Image 1 (spheres, helix red, strand yellow):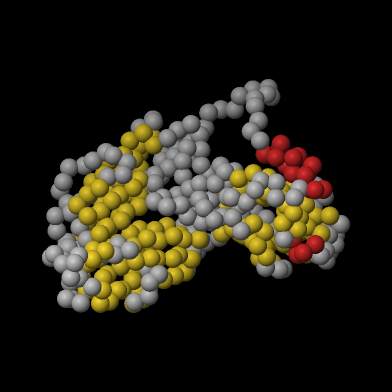
Image 2 (image 1 turned 180 degrees about the vertical axis):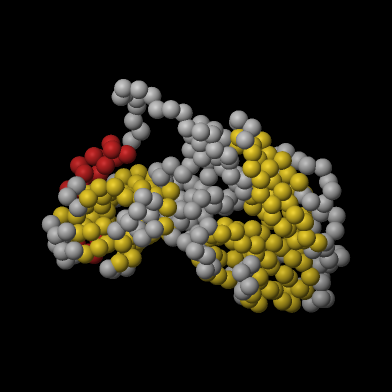
Length: 340
């Protein structure tokens, strides 16, 4: 159940103040950090020979950014420099597509991905296409194929890019077994009643939930040194994704915020229905990161924790989407207070 701020409100305000950006001060300025190379990354989606590419490249240096990009499609055509080009290959086959990106200082990096395309069927044919959305490792695939007049579906085959295939079902769900940030290429093949086929392929990036057992900075388990009731308050959110779900995973399983990106700031959730946990209980927390249409994860989603039993804990979460200054751990800020 969710509650208004009530007695937790002053503590939430303190946590919010502590998380705010600070100004200068102190006896001297820190030395400038060394410039890091950007991380080249891209997503793609193809329907037969026609593809769209989107750069999801990032630069983690505060104030820096991707200044240029260059695409080589591996088919002998000239390179292009737009961030999200469309490209139609002349023939079916596999092509090594290369993206080179550079930051404002000219430091560059590149990524190469194999893109396999198929020739379109003759008229009165299907035109395969699909959409995909993921919450952490669990993804939903929806067939959005269109058909010319006279073309009717006979069969569909999903290939999820991890050696698992599935026929017929639409929409369908699939859960990946990745243990870190991983790119898969999913494929949908449509065959109509005349035996004509069409294929659509898309890249997608998935990552396991951010958990208190693998958080940034060490172990983020909340240790209750005394028997206590526990509340969690949403201090702020600044999400790039959608559907960032916050859950307790041990010793009970309970959803704290179904979508911290849209749940009202200031909402307080009383964990375990208000019943006290025994002394020496260790609470474990996970955040299941959602997706955003036409974008892709750039970093491993992660959480970190500061504080202690006496003063309360502040949990900060980064959902893994890129941009200048990312990861910044301000996508979700949650204050957790134990009351003996």
